[in-house]
Amino acid sequence: MNTEFSISPTMEDYLERIYVASKSKNVVRVKDISKLMDVRMPSVINAINMLKKLNLVTQEPYGYIEITDYGKQIAEKILDKHNVLSAILRFLGVPDDIAEQDACSVEHVISEETFEKLKDHFRKFTPID
Image (cartoon, rainbow, N blue to C red):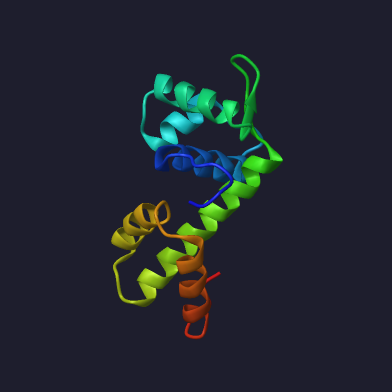
């Protein structure tokens, strides 16, 4: 993803999951993310620490995970890419489960320019966002 800095696809996935979880729950805990992503809690803790260093999330020791305003901006871009790419793939006839998997892979590597062109083009055919 083209941002002011580069974060790994794995960190993008964590940020996206934290953002989605924070929209549906009042609080987000390490164990929530562990369960959502099917990873061990130490992996989540390591990811949270890295996201904290990038000022994308905050967390008091053993406390709830909160996404920063800047983290929300980045997460919304990631989620938009995922949703639009998934919708485009479904429009093309790709089965739902494969569309979700492929959208998750492609969202990390597609350039902003290419993504916007795809989004603009497919908007002519289907409501994608």
